[in-house]
Length: 301
Image (cartoon, rainbow, N blue to C red):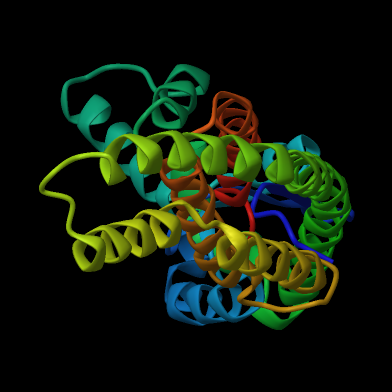
């Protein structure tokens, strides 16, 4: 069964200490193309993450986003803490300056000290001061990545089943049109025979008629119009295509793309050699179905 390159996977975990979400999206691409958005404390794991996804997803334009936040209540507790040492130092310095100027000190001096930078840390300063409260060990978050990858692979397989059925329906239509070509071929050959007979009567009556040269031309003409081999090869390619599409294969997309080229070659040859309006009409129909197949194969892994 074929696997699609289009996919989506998500994993979410919420605890008292943090909330983490891993989200994966992928579209079709000839190679593995990864875009990452990681929290700062996971930057060191970028290479490991890239290797894991490349091995698991193989191909596609992949976007990975890992969002990590702490509960607002926890942040509020950190930001509300006071740097006691800084407060006392600042208060005594302000009181000393006020007394040297002959000013009264008291509650106003304390409030002034509280407003100075560093006494009550900002949210950013609080996070820098307590990095352990924000960071989580990578082994604790790694299962979330595996869960998101598994969800994406399941999505790809489900999408692949739909694509497989659609592609095989196009193959079946080409097979039906080939059967119509086969059915019409005796009439085409009879028409060719009648034309050759008419030309033969005309040429043999000519004074400069060369029997040997005429025989060579007839053989060439008959061989040029014969599509028996092309019909057999096209039927074989269609059968192999259906077989390859129904079996699990990590490189199925590339194999089927090659087979589609071979199918197109045989269809084109039948069209160029048939020299018949009915066959040409069927060939156009087969080409239309083949283009649909090629379009869908762009999204096959």
